[in-house]
Length: 521
Image 1 (cartoon, helix red, strand yellow):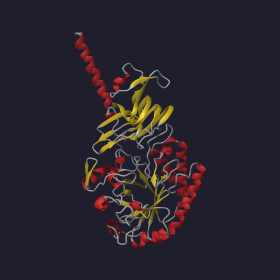
Image 2 (cartoon, helix red, strand yellow):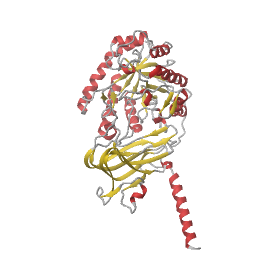
Image 3 (spheres, one colour):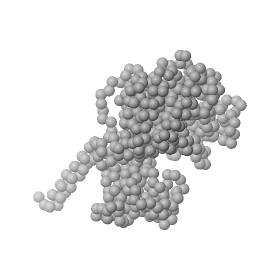
Image 4 (tube, helix red, strand yellow):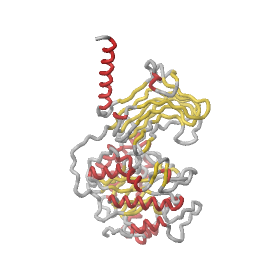
């Protein structure tokens, strides 16, 4: 056999072995990519440019720089077959010199992993400061959709100038795809109530008795989602958090008698968990410390045991919503991911109260895509909650900054959004519901009131039709909270007074509330 043929056979065998390995199921803790930029030709794997420079405790690292503000990235394609359905951690060490201020919060130094799938593109990335700083570790975690088509790692600068160095880049598996396990799908899912349907809204903890009476008695709603939410200036330490929580629970205690009189069941929503989301100008921040500090997780479990003791046997509470829109973008090595943390908190509640309904959202901020690959908790009496604001560019238009007017139905970011497209967006939740025989609750959904041409009404109409077809309970976001979401306010953003005649959105909600049955007193 000549040497050329032998070499070809060896190459084919190596390629077959590599392909077989690429298809093998990923294991928890497995490293699927690592690069310290030490190998000869280290930049060949990173098309786009860049240079080699002194590294972090090593000879070499990747350097990216721009003299003027703009974008410069190097990229590396990651074999998607290894990652589908996995929760992965993307990590590295980074240092920077003179990185300019970013025009938008998502710009700046980029350690980012865009993931494409038929449902759209995700852009998970590490939160990295600008300016100058010495080597520091950065990381984020993300669940890769089971139908992901491409995964490409990006390193560089976006819409800024300056220099940045990257080293010790790693992608590891935090949680592999759920292994198929025999499960008995119940003939009748647990719902935690005996009413035909729960239909209501989220409310501010500042709502008064008159507001509760209006919503429950005049509008005939039968459920509210009560936010336990703090401001940025509150709960900086464990002691102050406990003091804030006591005051927040006292407010709920005071409202419960009026809720019972008005026929309103209550979802207790821990909108601000320890180390987690705070109220930033009316909007929630990501749950950074809840997943980066194990002490916050231990306090989170203790908080739920405390709440369970307080409300054991108390009538009128439908369930405990363990955390609002959890986002596990960062995950400490010794910390639980959301599934394990929720299960641990749920078991703490069960030790006190074996029957109280637990409400669990997915780890991707509560959105429907997070149900792709999600595993149910190994606990009884659990309802699963989804929040629906897709497409975000439509529902939140001009909320954070001015944006063009967007209509529904219509094309949003290249996709034709109508009722059929919303069915596609909600498909992961429907499949989860059918696969595991669980009950689903749409805990939040809305569209900003100034969406043009009464688009918000059409969006809500189509969405509620779907919820009803799927048999889901639901709470609109929100009743007498911020006027931007209020169905009592009209389409003129400058008019902060409720309209004298009901809006089409209010009429829509009340037409559904009119069908409600009330809980037994």
